[in-house]
Image (cartoon, rainbow, N blue to C red; front, side, top):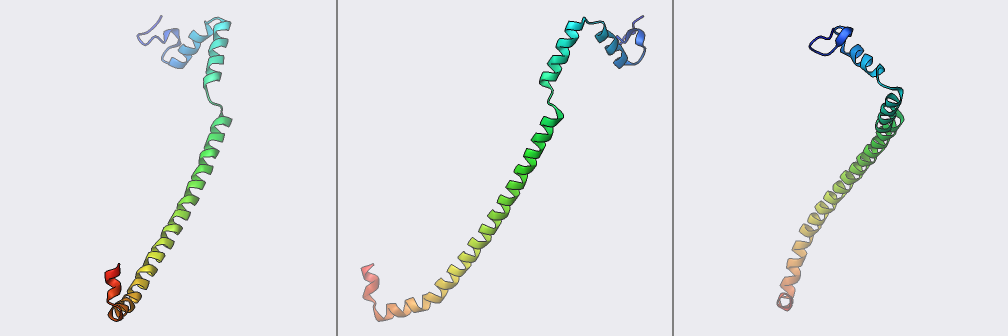
Length: 107
């Protein structure tokens, strides 16, 4: 006799009820269902390959980030050096303007 959950004679175990219903299906239909599940279920090998590929890509991105940070640090040092150079040149530029005031008008 079936109870309200449809577990039938298998009592309160829904898994055994489902297996009982599946065993009642014709062999051809069971084979088609199994083939369908095999077709659309990724294998563990595929999932492992995807995981390894993602790990390799993560390593590449982390290496690229380290290179970017190094380039940014180099740029900051260049900016600081350029500012220091400009500060050191400024007094000399003022002196040259004192000796050649017409030079500014030509620009």
